[in-house]
Image 1 (cartoon, helix red, strand yellow):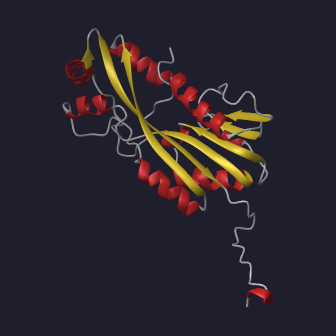
Image 2: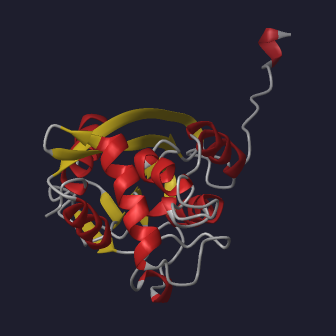
Image 3: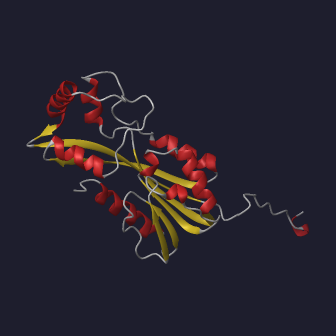
Length: 231
């Protein structure tokens, strides 16, 4: 079905194409080994949710690292530290992530059922920008967009979320079965808050980010002393 991922991939690819004049060696980390960056010189596609943890890369292997949405389920700080290790001096990191408004209709609807965590919490844009600076990246640019997706039914909504990798791995989530009565109460609340015409309208906040790695490979700062003629 793929109601959501395709437009996000297109937007991310357009941003990369604008910033990258020539093909570069790239690592793309995405849900489905997508077709991002097909014009690049060398592209390796992996999914963090599948086998990326078992893949070893040497330091400074890539000019460009792209992390599409997967940082929403991982520790962003650890991801960008790894991206920094993999990038060559002057390389670029591009990423997209879900922001805190994502699935707001589901969050509200579950709150009408109980006070447990049914929707995975997503990180604010400003936190991601601060993490990039803390990791040593320069010139970070982070901005936010909102996508509103119409689903013909709740069943289609949940099937699409499942196919697109949405999983609540929050430690305080409900781990027991939800139960038919509780789920029906949730569905009634969702229909009431999210119905638009004949569809279920769901909000996704998308954070897009870019940062560069300094072209000083040792992380040092060059200081040019004045010449004798300047004294």
